[in-house]
Amino acid sequence: MTESTEIRKVEPLTRKDMFSTYLRSTFMLGSFNFERMQAIGFCVTMIPAIKRFYHKKEDQAAALKRHLEFFNTTPWPASAIFGVTAAMEQKKAAGADIDEAAITNVKVGLMGPLAGIGDPIYWGTARPILAALGASLALSGSILGPLLFFFGINIIRMLTRWYGFKLGYRQGTDIVQDVAGNRLKKLTQMASVLGLFVMGSLVSKWTTIKMPLVLVSYKQAGHVISTSLQNIMDSLLPGMVALLMTFACMWLLKRNVNAIWIIFGMFVVGILGYWAGIFGL
Image (cartoon, rainbow, N blue to C red; front, side, top):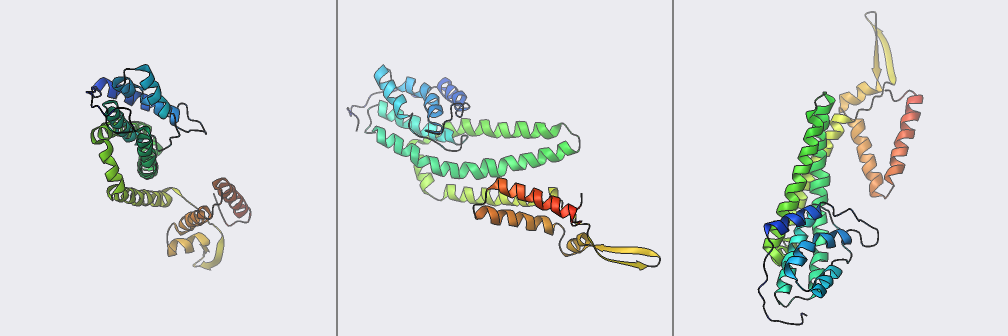
């Protein structure tokens, strides 16, 4: 509990403070380590808010110390946690009945849900979609391809960081109710479905497996007609081999087979298949 319950007037964050917090958050992973992960980055990001709310050196030092505890989540939506934490620090500095454990518990409670949202939305949906669109344009020789990916992903990053912090600071601890509800769960499900849809389309568009092995060959009207394994597979379902390979990789990953071993295994299968005449270039 706080030492005093007297309510004091504390100045809210200015736009300059918010912008300084935003700039610091972009370097959140600059001091990433395997002991406390993003803790130092979180602490450095909170410095403008701590200086605004606390004027005594000992209070500032205590606030910095409690933000050096373990922290790790998806970096971009982490700005919402910065905002919520800043709102709680402001209430604590004003004399509200908020102790250090409460601030830490809210941070820890938001890490998991926001990571569960951030990974499928940003890494599983936004990045593959922009990469696919950019690569398609780049393959045609257009400079717009890499520009689309670079500017697109950075615009999403900047908007998420800026408005995420403002939302978290404005909502304060009330945002925890949204995390506990079904809004974030539904958003995560929709993002996951969209990401799977995009990845499925990429498998069909970019994965090509040629199987020129001739199964039947005969003459007709003076011409040699050959039926290859590729012809049979395409007549059943175009892209079926690529789809089966994708399912096989998913099956191996679910059984905790290391992705590196899967990649090496595909190299071995491809080389041996080409040597045996089953696969072609």
